[in-house]
Image 1 (tube, rainbow, N blue to C red):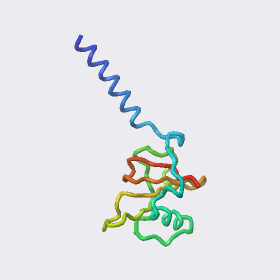
Image 2 (image 1 turned 180 degrees about the vertical axis):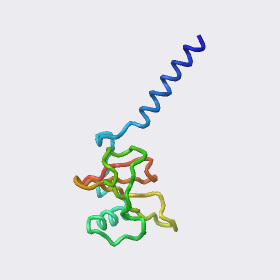
Image 3 (image 1 turned 135 degrees about the vertical axis):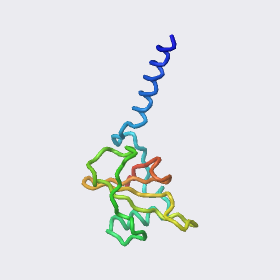
Length: 120
C-alpha cells in the first residue's frame, strides 16, 4: 500500500511541477493600461518608444524569460528596462520587458514574479 501511495504522490508532484512551469501563451497574462502604470513606468515606456536615453546601463539587455512567465519566443526577443522606484537607491524590482516584432510590452512590479501586458 505504501508503494501505491508513493506513486500517486509522485504523479501529483509531477503534475504540479508541470503546471508551475507551463509557458504563458499570452492569454494567461493579465493586462494593465498605460494610464494604470506608475508615473515612472509611463516615463520608461515613453523612453523605450523613443529609443532612450535610459537611466541604467543594464536597460535594453536581453531578458531570457527563464521563468517562462511570458509567451515563449526565440532568445533575444525580449529586452528589459528599469522602472525607477522612488526612495530606492538601487534599480529596485520594477521592470518593463518588451518584445520585438510584434512589439508587446509587459510590466512587472515584483522582479519578474508576475507580469501584466501593457495595453494602450
